[in-house]
Amino acid sequence: MSMKRCDDGHFYDSSKHAACPWCGVVAEAEDLKTTPLKEPTEPSRDTAATVAVHRQASGVSPVVGWLVCVEGPDRGRDYRLRGEKNFVGRSPKMDVCIAGDEAISREKHAAVSFEPKKRTFWLLPGESSGLVYLNDQVVNTPTEIKSRDVIEIGRTKLVFFPFCDDNFHWE
Amino acid sequence: MIPVTRSMEYAPGNAQHIGSRSEQQDAFGFSEWDRQDFVRHGGRVAVLADGMGGMDQGAAASRTAVTAFLEAYGHKTPDEGIAEALLRAAHGAHRAVSSLASAKNVPGNIGTTLVAAVVHDAVLHWVSVGDSALYLYRGDTLSCLTTPHNYGTELDAQAARGDISVMAASTDPQRQALTSYIGAESLDEIDLNSEPYPLLPRDRLIIASDGLFRTLADHEIVARLKADPPDPAISLLNATLSKRNPNQDNVTILTIQVEADATPQELSSLSQARSSYSRLVLPGAVIAVVVLMAAGWYWRQPSPSTAKIRMGPAADKERFERSEQMTLDSLPLAQDQGNSRPAPGQQRQTAIRP
Image 1 (cartoon, rainbow over the protein chains, first blue to last red):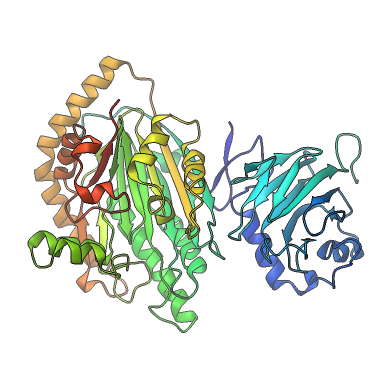
Image 2 (cartoon, chains in turn blue, orange; image 1 turned 30 degrees about the horizontal axis):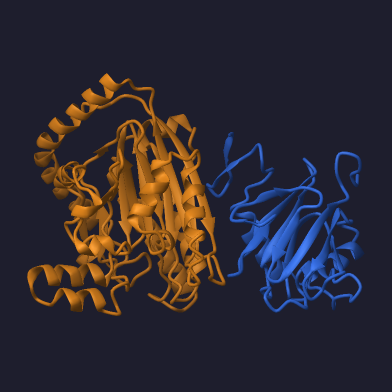
């Protein structure tokens, strides 16, 4: 394990994380609150990808993967994942808005991040009271996810599919 | 003065979770671990702050305190003692949080706990304000080195004197209310060890917010550490969250693992050296009390005239060594409840023997 210290004085395993996992979520959450440019439009009923749609309009962040709901009130719906952190919650402000599941917290129940340097995907616990599971194991710390892994959140099960990987990457 | 001056390796670790709260109000940080020019005289420091949720700006308070503390401690010069630098840094954090409160127009109403530990040349120094905790895990024994500044501590002291009943002390709804914290209008109590505390190879230091020790009983913490997990901070976090406590507070765990390639003979001689050190240290402790109280008077900000610097004296080490003979069965009733904290002058120890 190669422990690295970030600028805020947290230690993390730099062989697993390109950036500090202990301070990233907080900074991103503050951005969401304070940056008007990132305020989302109303969610599309087709994709429920809200902030992500906005990001696409600015040309910043193309699709890097998907979540597909296989169990729960929104069964059959897909959710686009974009670069860096995608927050999951019921609120339309969330990047992945699962509006139909009351058991999911409104904001930041969990996050799925894409790390572009190593082209890896990570599941992060959120800031809400609810837990998130990966393949039936509770996720307490950032955990790498692979194709067809099952993410359980509230009463919803989501299957993960990467688009960016060793074979393709947005330049 | 201290016979143990060997070089040791210190491995840091950290883990944090928001629990069931809506906001993460814990903050933490380590100093630059490999900056040798500073490490030579200032050692390595780990600091944790737990912002007070009942007040405004709990998250801002803890982050401000950690940042200000690390910055102030980083200004330590080789001429300044580590204890003095810790005290100065604690007051620096206090001033920064007080300034934040003034800027928000809520003076005295922004607060956070703060606990910091410094490891340097095989000894430990610490400073604490509030009820976050520093533990030492040695052998199979867990010892809480800090004394919480909460009303429960005062109630336990009153019960010990016979002023109130043990039942009244243990059931008071205000037990967990803090009596001293960073940002308070008057910084009344600072917990500071008077003498460097000798460390041994394989010691484990655990710094935690109350999200850990209000959910896990001491013996559960011991059980995790006894398994010698590669990352004890993550292991303790997982143990905490596996309880599925619906009221789980923010939890932050920092660890420092003391590593040294010591043979059993070396360990034995280190232990003997520590025993003789305990007998010699009391006069030094008295001198240190006088010096540090003078230092506390000098750095009293913003309202230090009533500050009490509680020393963790040499006697604490003797109690710790005696406690190594304790087992779970012999622990006092209050400690069996798992969530109690030590009364003044008491340390909390839990041991599991095979």
